Image (cartoon, helix red, strand yellow):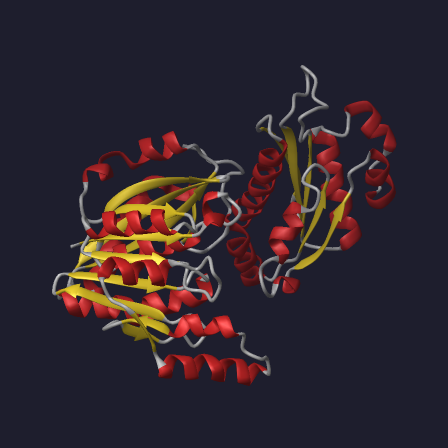
Length: 419
């Protein structure tokens, strides 16, 4: 069977809101074994919505619409679908009472236009929405065709889809096959290198392999198909073991495990503390570390020493060293890390200095040149990296590389991947 996703809202076409709903729906449908062949986005225009709905009904067994179920005049999805399907709208007293009760609980008077949300196409099944005022709707066109209307607010749409709609679709269509994906996250190498390292694994069909490029990372997505959950786990475990063997230590995490989460776990397990001295990254490394709940157990402090004066005044880096070698140098990066470790009295200290750009580079020290140093009980080492000409990308890549340097040190790995 196949489905089509229809997202409604002029704000989506204007780029004012990113269409995360379509991505979420597509992923959940894939997991349920339902193929998505088309995804359409249409603005708040009745004629264009009608054309999109008619086209979707002509080529898909299941049409899932999000958006346009609110109480305002430009919320048109409910009305258009009622027209296309030939089902007149009827005021549903139960839905109206639920909406009124929701406003009463909040102590807010209900506007008259909220009554529009209680208008239900004749014969449609109402999908309860405890998180908002717009109920979902499910219309059975014939034994083989279904239209589902979902709220556009992600916090309302997502549980309605996963808890109500998908179980109904599996029941109606007798779906037994399941699809599950798992993502292995790599860093430090290019997409082409990961592709090369996977070698013969590309020929395997279940689970399949796909590469997804992310900022500073290459994700390896494994997708398995099976009828039972246990079989899916068995298939994915086997392929994951093969991929890890091929890729080695460039794999740092799985699914939602970010690099800062992995680093935090390693620091906790070893009961070590970390401090960070940042120049070109402007606090980004510290920001990522402290995004992890519980990071106060291992992260002591971070300091942004952007100017030469700050490097001297706050860290104690000798002004003579900066004058002789330049702020962007291996020597200054090492001094920053050493001084931070001494001053903070931590086990590890990380330092980053570089030329973020787009200006400030020279032929000898181009934009993107970055030095990252790590000081520990055994000494200090600074490493040179050459990133991009884009300022934001340079900061992101520097922060990613710095965190990976800590990971590699804690695991006893080479400072950079050796492939």
